[in-house]
Length: 231
Image 1 (cartoon, helix red, strand yellow):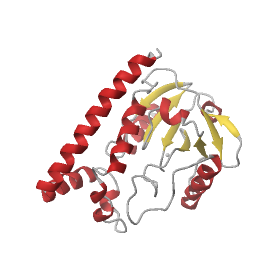
Image 2: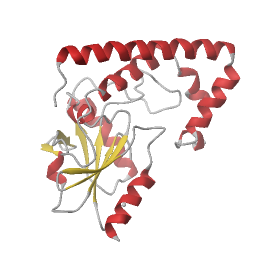
Image 3: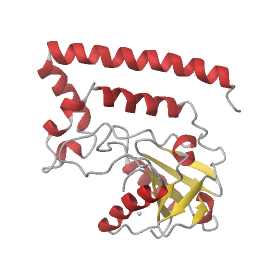
Image 4: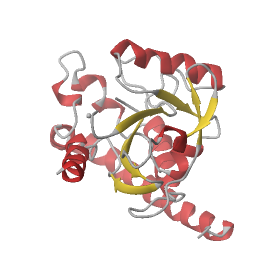
């Protein structure tokens, strides 16, 4: 059911207040108890690959927390989740995407019969399922909430910018198709995918809906779903 526009804006105002309060409290705590706050952030990062990357020190990204760029990015993510159109068992949005050759297509075009389709939004199995990487807007653009020692990619101003950035994924030799979201960010909005998220679709419906990353990005849950289907 579509959320009425006034209701959407009221929820956005409430989220704005929540995020502003979160950032203000974070700044105060970071000033008063910097060691404890850094320890808590590092504990959360253990759930992701950030803390385990030897080329990516925590000093590259922890100081960026509670900055103005952090505030705007978190606000954008929280606002996007208000437009989440997905639920397990429900119909999967057939959003438009663009192949790296520039051809426009839709998510459902990558479904093969009754085989599950794993959607990997925003980052990086295949005898029993098909896979699709959907490259969305940059989470840590160099002109946004940037981390030090990270890939230098600015916010995409047009589709060509997004396609050029997505080609960097090919250096990792993904064993599945890579497409990009449109500049209207329809896939990212309807699947509430920013900054990264996993889904499993089957026959046009959502079989599995992962929680938002990076803290709750768990490929092992996708593996468990596929193994259950295969057994």
